[in-house]
Picture 1: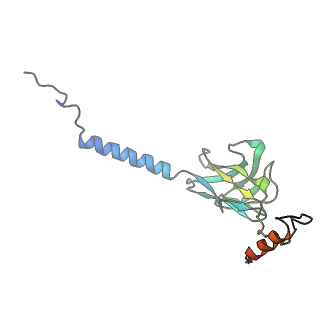
Picture 2: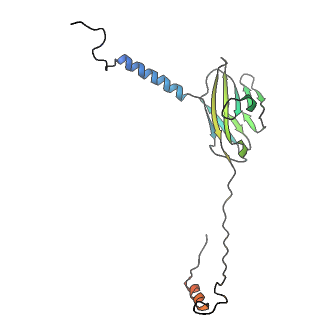
Picture 3: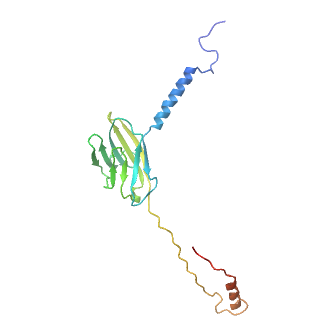
Length: 184
């Protein structure tokens, strides 16, 4: 009988193989968890109020930021750029004056309007000149006014001018059966 250099049972996985798989999954999950994120604060803004596009999980060695209106990096839709070392802010082609960029890359919309609703994309430029991109969505709604109810209670005699068995006697009985309604 000849001995084989391969294991007799192929279904068996060594502990080194399992360790490698766990290690790879751990690094893969860490990469996903640390991905650049952009979220609206508050999630549903109200017209005339300030809304912040908050940035988290920023990469290391950042050189600057560029914000765009829309769901992609599009130079003609650039809102504003920011150089970190010099704190230099440069307005873009769609800058309206109501946007304010912060040193952490977050973007504030002052006195937001429903027209601001949409996607916004942040491009983070690293010192290596590689970039990371994150997209967030902004929702701006018109304020809802408080509801009011106006109740007017009046009476029109449907039997007015009628004679016979369903005339004024029936109407008098209906009034006796009515109970007052109290509105609070």
